Image (tube, rainbow, N blue to C red; front, side, top):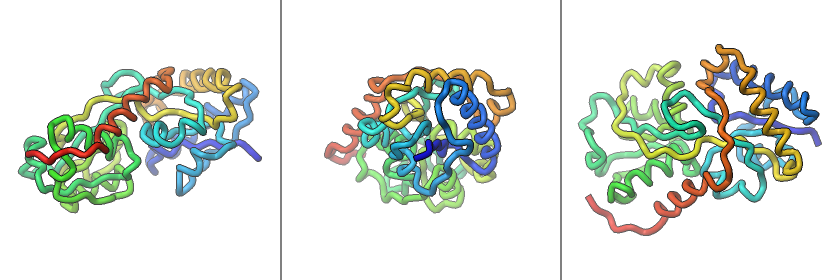
Length: 263
């Protein structure tokens, strides 16, 4: 079987060329370290299949599926650092509402509709509910929840009044401010507490090659030209560990515990 690679998390139409250039640098660096890699990225409709591929040489996933589903099948390489005014390798979510909405604080979300990208999204789903939980509010505080399918679609749904609030990871929000016109009708209500960002992983069978793979990634990221860095908001690399991601698991367990509605 041939090796596979996927970088689906920020692969917007406007950033696809930059992602291909990023992969070109990663491919060459992996090759320099004698690691077989595909010449092109896989862009599968279902990224979960790609993340679980036993031939995955490098992929980027979300922290929630990583801690809940992938830790037994994959090895953590580390975490890219982005230009979002957050600690290296960390990120947070912005809670967005329409510019003209009569929503000024979290308590104003009572009976409102929450739009979310996916229930396995840390930034788009779990972070939002942990934020509510920390404020003493439960799922029942909201009026309804509506699946949108992606962060970008959540932004559009808020702007078009299909939903009242959404939780968007800070990197996606920064990209949206550049590329998505719907952001002009939106304002930020609040920000969630930071967690480790979107991890780079490799298949569990690559454990013995993890060190050269990690080194190849570090060298490739350092070699990127400024244009690609800016297009993808890339700042560098953080050598995170599985333990760093335990906070995501513990917060998820918090929000799945029964809680009496307040507010």
